[in-house]
Length: 527
Image 1 (cartoon, helix red, strand yellow):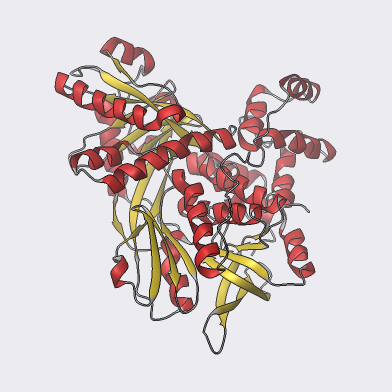
Image 2 (image 1 turned 45 degrees about the vertical axis):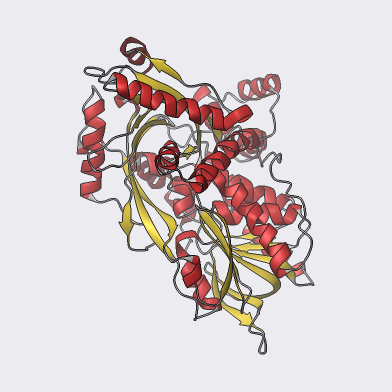
């Protein structure tokens, strides 16, 4: 079946028995659980209230990393749990890059130093970072002088610096990565739906255990009911709402941290090397990162009120511009900002012992899997993008051992090449784009967005009248891609395409509006 809502509803309609596992939430964690579960042989359904990766999972700092600042805290506080978290994340970093090479790649990051003590301190820290990575290390860190730093980052103000430390982490297209996991799960047999909101749970009258989920299709308004053995709550910052739908006696566990970012034109930061600013006046860490022909500056980290689609504030924009201008030769102003976005990171606030009527298994400090003893709702809480696969594995282990009461099966996601991640025949690819007169810019876009599936996209566009023509001469997007995204990637509105499938509006609001104005009719019937 195609990755379309019509086909997914047909799959559900044809299902004559209950689902083993129903997952609420289509971000990174929910997607990871769906793939892990279906590869273990379970019948899986996933529903998402909005679009896939519509909230936190598409608004990250786009890094695949162990967390240099977490390592510093682990050493300073002699915190073994923090150290283990960094260890797991560093080893998952290589897995993420290998499983979707079109969507994730190594990234060089430079840490500036202002004294010889800084060189020694950060040098030892990055050396330790490399050692913890072990055989999964991307490349060894090294000390650099000012002249070499100027060569790598021509726009960097090196005056007053005493060199720096160059190290390596990863970068990803977060929204597309989440989609690739979901496409993989669907290919393996899972039913996957966006724009379907959980209405309520159907509970057993005697045990009050969840037996069914009731959800509403937000596009056609129809209500649906599905029987299931286990429900996994993977809704990130919105976890408490689902927990209390299952059991009103459960105390809130979550709080959110606000991470704001701004995007600048590429001309402000040439080269492929990012900058880690390890010291700010208020103790935060800020990154300046080359990102898909733009420059990403972020992030803030402060408490926030839970909301959907939070907007960047003027003071956050000013804060990030200030730090960018402290390190960049080309000074940027508010008029230069192409876009800004905010992601809310889910954090745990209530201790395990205070969680009412729940049997909770703590796995690592940054995430926990909770099983409510009454409803048997399984909630995966906390975590970050880099450890999404470990979080899913831990969740499925708890599901099998504590809810289904089965022997824990092996996880098969570590070496699973995600949708579009297969190696493409370069000779054949070059022949195809040449025969179809595809520009280098469009060819690069297709490979970076779709990977191996770019061949299928080209075939689709070739069949459509005018499908190989550009939407706009200055942009790489093909006319036929719009219908492809609607028919094969469940894009249901402009925001799905502009903010997540292509991500252009997240980088450049003006260009996103340009596409929308040119192709107004593409989603005229939505909502």
